Amino acid sequence: MIRAHLLGLTVAAFVAGAAGAGPLEDAQAAYERKDFATAQRLWSPLAEQGVADAEFGLGRLFLFGNGVIQDGAQAVSWLSRAAANGRTNVGWLLGQIYDGDLDVLGLNVVPDSAEAVRWYRVAAEGGFMAAWQQLAEHYAEGRGVAQDFAEAIKWYRKLADEGDIFAQSQIGEFYRVGRGVPQDYAEAARWFGEAGNGGYAYAQYQMGLLYRDGRGVRGDVVEAYKWLALASGAAAPFPGAEAERTLLAVKMTAAQIAEAQRLANAWKPK
Image (tube, rainbow, N blue to C red; front, top):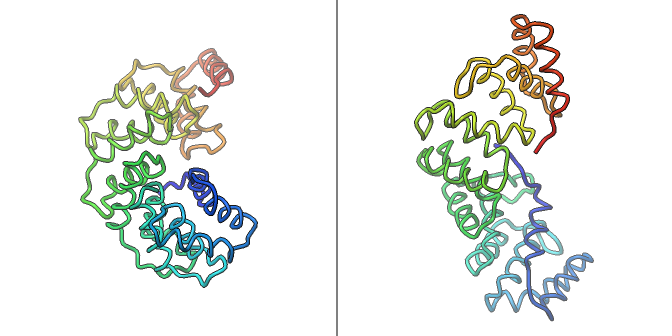
């Protein structure tokens, strides 16, 4: 499973969305200076009144054991209330807890993929992009829900529309193998091309093979070599790309190889 969002950064995004002044603002300021007792004192009465930002604040205290005894059940209780009361992005955090991805915190929450999906959906429908990816992965793998490639593609498309190169590559893969959609090499090439132009090594590798075999695109050994060179020279090279490039070079002239390498050297990510 791809983890595109670090927990600390994601929680920071939640906090940045908090609104209000007075006690809420004072509680957040106390939390940031690690005066957790003051933060708890200010959040508690507001949380009891159903103020979502305060519920989220208490949930964080119990989640990390800041100024209180760490308590997974209490964390889940307050975070669930916050998500239900409008802080829908907190659903992603609850999904991570129920997926067991935060076991390292020692929360002792029994993993429940179905419950994770339920909360990811709350966050996803509230527009939180990290949850779109989680839903796509769960539907593709059949974790917590019946496997449904069409539903997975729906969520990957939302990510792809935002320029997410991993999602673009995933859609290309679905079209390449005919999973959830009719097999369509031209569509696969379109999506792999988007992801490859963004610098995603697997998509670049697949573009090399498509050009090599003339599937969905015209057969072109120069383009094939270029893409395989990019995939093998990426910051995170795709395994096998270098071997495919070496095999392809045997069938090419020195001039073709030079041109392909020139194109690869001139390439810039979009």
